[in-house]
Picture 1 (cartoon, rainbow, N blue to C red):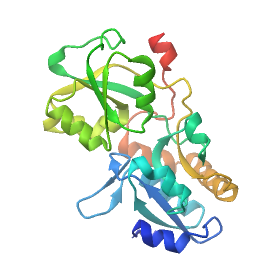
Picture 2: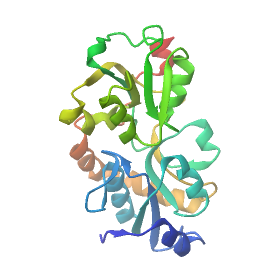
Picture 3: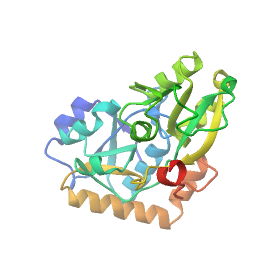
Picture 4: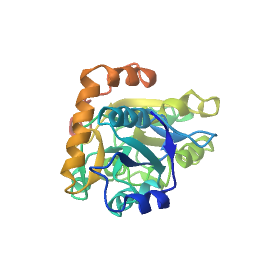
Amino acid sequence: MKKKFMTASVIAALFAAGTANAETLAIGTEGDYAPFNYVTAAGEIKGFDYDIGQAVCAEIKVDCVWSTNEWAGIIPALQAKKFDVMIASMAINPDRKTQVDFTTPYYFNAMRFVARKDLGLKDISPEALKGKVIGTQSGSVAVEALQEFFPDSEVKLYPTMSEVFLDMENGRLDLILEGQMAFTEWLAKEESGCCAFVGESFVLDTAEGNAMAVRKGDEALLSKLNAGLKTIMENGTYDKIRKQYFDFDIMAKPKTTSEYFR
């Protein structure tokens, strides 16, 4: 399929009327959440989210036009019709369900702590992390977990994960809490040798997986996307893409926060 990239303003002008029945579909992602979605040095959008989106578009026979958007404003951008479907590894939660409609999940991204090796941490209980400085991306589900279970830790929020990783490398954070798979590329780099996983992975009690999102009430588009997802999961396309990024089952749901911390 032909790959196209356009600015959000151009997409907004072209698709303000909605594209549920059009041959071209405007897709929004973040572009700073490798390996799920990122922008290459050549300016191309790549990653697991992108490949899944392209596969679904092929199944429902639409041409995809992608744009990148700041995470903090990505739901308002969808609501403002700057694009018509968000494919950005967004986790389904009760608050977001009041703002957008989600497809069936296409993976579960369990959270996990990464800690500085020199701390020698083995325990990630709230008591063990009391007073520790923990970083994560603002607007992520990790924020909810930290607020509920780690009230005595100092939480620092950042616009992007790139900034979280940079502060960790520079010693300004003790730990990071984020989706486990978001650490894959960073931990493989030499400069992140400071740090390693600690404790087991977990999800919020309310976790329903990570999914694509459309504007509230756009049932026609939601139905098409769900049909496309179902097809690629049944015909082997999904698993072929998954194996390019992860060598384990990403549809399996791990322990919940209640099971882990209570």
